[in-house]
Image (cartoon, rainbow, N blue to C red; front, side, top):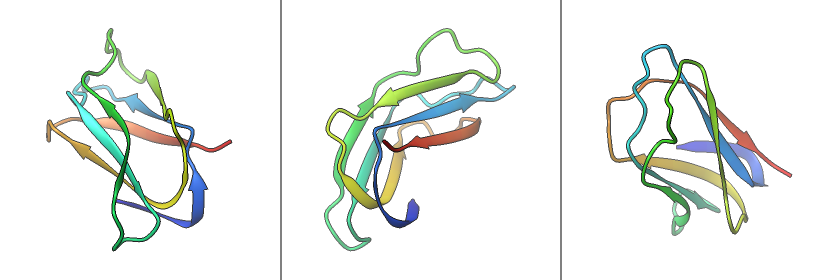
Length: 90
C-alpha cells in the first residue's frame, strides 16, 4: 500500500523490469480516500507487455483518474522482480 502526503490524481503508472526478467502476470490498482474507506478499482491488467527485456519501462494509463491519498496494487503472481515503480500525476 502507498500512502501519499496528500490526495493526488494518478493519470498513469509504470513498472521498470529488472535483470531477472520475472514480471507480474496480472494485477489490479486500487485507490481510496482513507485507509478505512472503500477501495476503488482504477486499473486492471491481464499480462505484462512483451517483449520483456532488462530494465525496460512499461506504462499503463488510468482511464478515469480521481484524487486518492492511498493506492495499492494487488498482484496475482507473487514472485516477480521489478526495479522501479513510477507514479505520474498531471
